[in-house]
Length: 245
Image (cartoon, rainbow, N blue to C red):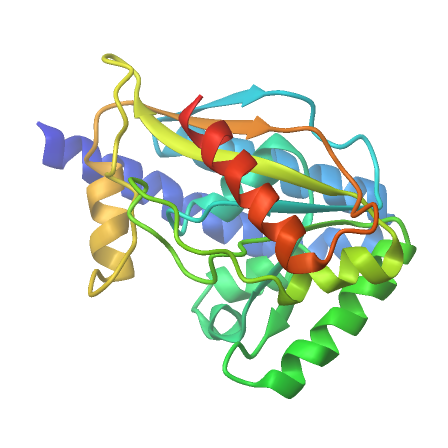
């Protein structure tokens, strides 16, 4: 029965992705930016529904930019989960741009791509992020740099936080987690780490019992003269608390 339900969910997700691609090609270019953002958020909420995932938002999402969101990273689902909670522009590894279907949708949602292995590209990205923050965008990064197992938080990298320092923009910590709807216990079904394949993670997610995706927003804060390494250490501590609360 669980496999049958998984197949049904997977078919619905694929159909929803195709609808999303049609919207990207035919509708989004004709809409003003605010309406494009709203369409992305509605699409993300529906995607979670097709996966059997309920969204729970805690705290206060940013009403407007400039703000840099910093969240822990668990799954390929983190981006649509955060889009469903509040539209934002992500900074993502360049590989995502080449993913079939997903890359097209991510680009349409305003994703900025970085080549993580290149120090020069990191400098370029900080400049783009600073410009976006000065244009009052809401940006989001995963400062761990990769997905974790959801049990322990990996170290945070401070380099992309420089954009908030340079633009004098606030940073807002965000804690993400998935829980089993029935028991309230943490679920690792959507995890995507190590040698796991994307398809394997997707199949495990669609076969899982109903889940709740919790997005917990902390309070935005400015650097206030702090060196970025000290600031990122404090933000990491806050994110660690939010993801467990």
